[in-house]
Image (cartoon, rainbow, N blue to C red; front, side):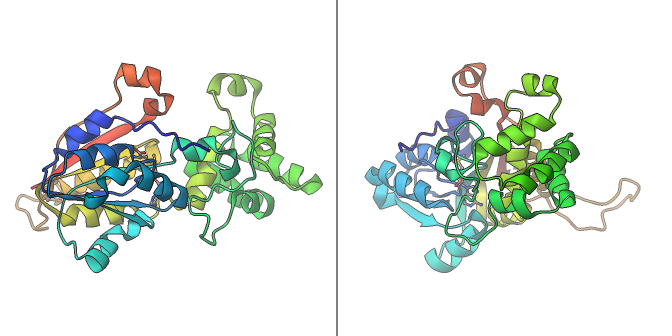
Length: 312
Ligand SMILES: C[S@@+](CC[C@H](N)C(=O)[O-])C[C@H]1O[C@@H](n2cnc3c(N)ncnc32)[C@H](O)[C@@H]1O
């Protein structure tokens, strides 16, 4: 299947990175190589390190980025390991910019076989790295307890009908194992009030999002890796992060807020005793959102938020 993914807020990301032609850049989530192509184009003497945990993404982006191969290194791994890999395998201690474009690519969603989609039927999988021995969506919906399902749907999907959905899943799986994304979608929709099914636009999306985040541990350690990347930035280096839902955006926002705050002492203390120093400044006070034109062309961009910081 063709790897299709339109890079979100491409111009805004490139502007945010403020690329130095001889700089060292890191794309933590190379996907189809859309953002990376534009970064690579601007490098002269610089280098771009690209990571992705999905083998298909690495294969596809290596074709897309072929013409820039002298200035690009592709590495299949979880970006949470990127700071260590950069230092230990490539001897890179300092970088001039990084991009994390969180979430799934359109390719992963469109390919039913990967089991991420409630629009295309496929086996319930949802692992971004299919070589990893982690639980699949099928194992979760067929074996996890009612309480565990409710927790996952509430915490990672902010699904207000978590109990009703979990209870329907538990009832249905007693008769037949739940195997496909369409079976799960129908079970979810059956548990929801009719008006929610019609008004939500993808009634099962919160549960699908919750399962995906849980399986791929998308939120775990995000703040830690962000801090490590910020620490690696050279003065005036830029960090850019694209998020697609409030859970991940909150983590990014809080970490950037903490790192851009000069003193963490409570206001009642007249003189700073914490010694905390800001290491970055926020380039934009509010997150950047996609233009109306982009939102019209690409529905994935409607919920995207871009945060940009600069190392002090
Ligand atoms: C939204 S896409 C990136 C698209 C890319 N910016 C482009 O222009 O084509 C997100 C990518 O991040 C990857 N990804 C998600 N979580 C990851 C992680 N923890 N480590 C490495 N890659 C990850 C996914 O496999 C997917 O390919």
